[in-house]
Image (cartoon, rainbow, N blue to C red; front, side, top):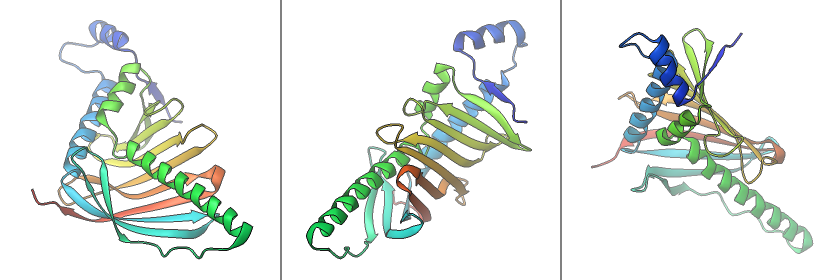
Length: 233
């Protein structure tokens, strides 16, 4: 049975520490959450010194419809900048009313895909400042998910009704997995996200594989990141 501990309010933490915690000791939940925040900040900073290759596959109803390959790096504003390495061939245009319907649906799907991909970058890598907002709100929690595995949950991380879950080892030193439940414009357009983390030789963790699902549209996006290289200073 998974046991979940809810992060208490700042006032409650202060009172509990004053009454029940011996001098010099630290609340275990506070310690783990603080370690997760520090880990995210250090890792995010380290990632900004790398460039990498991103491969994106778009599937509709289980069939791959589009594949792109991009060269990526972080810009001065902290956002990911992409340069196309491989572009998909333009789709064959159909004439008449059927062609207009196909073109309209393709445009709608492309717009949703771009919005969903942009949403991914708002969750990955986790932002320590946004984690702190959830901690201050008193809704962050910690759960033991198995031997040597902890899950830290941040509901309402980006928008009301979403949730960010970070899976760490018990020492909160290695981020293993990121899970997100969110949505585009409304909750009727749900988006799910699972990120499997991998490590570079210097210990920096990165999103090795990303699976983004849009069940209402039967769309799935698979992203594979590889070929990380240090950028020239």
